[in-house]
Amino acid sequence: MNAPDDSDHARAGIQSVEVGFGLLRALGEARGPLMLRDLAAAAAMSPAKAHRYLVSFQRLQLVVQEPASTRYDLGPAALQLGLAALSRLNPVQLARARVGAWVELLGHTVALAVWGNHGPTIVHWQESPQAVTVNLRLGDVMPLLRSATGRCFAAWTAPEALAPLLREELAWLQQLPPSAHTDDLPRTQSQARALLSEVRQRGLARVIDTLLPGVVGFCAPVFDASQHLVLGIVTLGSAATLDSAWDGATARQLKAVAKQLSTDLGGSA
Image (cartoon, rainbow, N blue to C red; front, side):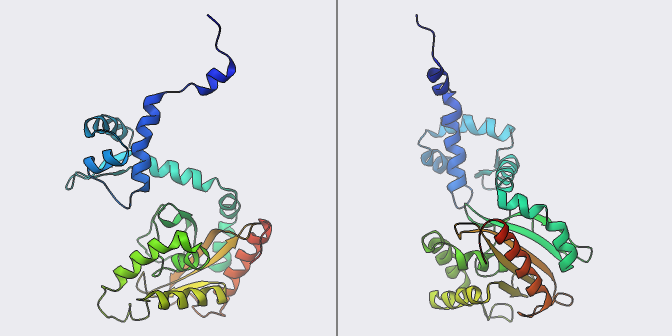
């Protein structure tokens, strides 16, 4: 018998790992948790077979099962792996090394966001000494029209990638009752286009007392050498202390640091 050559070793693998990964991929592509039968169908396997894989994935914390609904979703280990992969992108590495200086310069909390599978995703966060309490976590996906982060990414993301998420959020916004916090939110495609056009013209996105009551948020875009949006730099703070003016100190400083990072990546603001 001939000894296997290097190409045989390169092709060798563990088929069960590859099959099981289909379940993780299906969860990653889903809009939310899935019932066993739906998850199995998405991964093209029987429910009984899918269940055996899911038991092991639960032990590894790659998957969790909601007690009330019995639906399955990605677990904390999957989140950690995803965040680690995102954080190793060069733009994120460069930005993370500077976040401390930006917090000191701006005097407010700074976060970094990238475009993930489901939209703008927070991948790094550093609070300032005077940080306001906000219910945000690493891995959170920000709404497109109710957050500065979402507006920033929506303004410079390819329309084909944006369209389904934008339709979904507009449908949700149309159901909101009128209030002081929602009156200025877009309800139609034309209103959304006008809002995102203003973001591009200003080179910066802003929300005041919208997603988080009493909080002002800005997000500035960072571009790479291909002029693709690769990162959003976010700062947020109390409306009582953060300068919310478009031409105020916070807006100017945030645009400046984003422009410098874009330049360092070979891009331009």
